[in-house]
Amino acid sequence: MEQTLFFVLLFVALIGFMFWSQWRARRRYQQQLDQLQIGDQVMTIGGIYGKLTRMDRESHSAHLEVAPGVEIRISLSAISRRLGPGGE
Image (tube, rainbow, N blue to C red; front, side):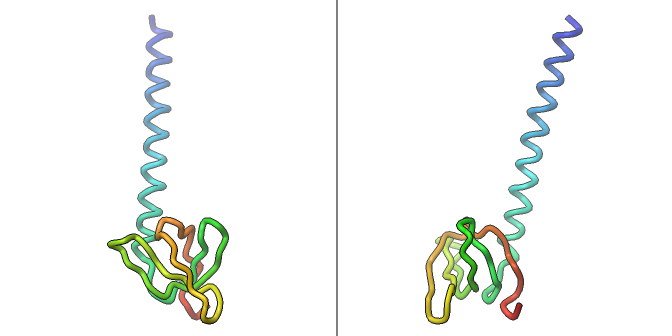
């Protein structure tokens, strides 16, 4: 009986830790997206580097300049990380 209770508590603790870790990572990623500004250099989850030229938070999309005169439209959730402001 005590052994079963121990394993149940251990299982509940592990599941709770997993959910807490995911929640923290999601919150950190959302904060990162909220800090994005036009002109920032970013990298997408596909490894494309570019400069943010437009953002529409309502439609959850952005435009990246990947080469002079070449812009692509991406989902905001495709942005993996911010590399720095436009000047870098």
